[in-house]
Length: 165
Image (tube, rainbow, N blue to C red):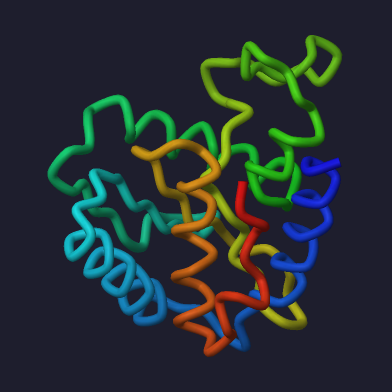
């Protein structure tokens, strides 16, 4: 039941956390907000914000590792393919090996079932990119992104947060 509740809440997050516009300055401001929080809290994460045509913001913080860059790339690919958060897909597919079923035709070298990437959606346009974080447990990666989006868009975190485990 908790997974079903999380899937429903993530759907709400995706509908609520939408931008009126999104450009390079927006990506930098959002990325900087997330970086500042991560530094203040000692979160060893990689932050990656991209539109579908180019990178817009990237930061690797103390405590992150070289593999985190690959994890954000694979999570971002999930958002691009499904136009939904990578954690939502992780919960829907629920495969312990973190790979997509063979019938989906998605190479595990390029796609992973793991939380931490969220669609960047613009009103009247749709999903134009993704913000991804890697370095924490996947539910926490997802929550860090959602918190940053809430703060940036002026939405109360508690209204959109996943239930406590």
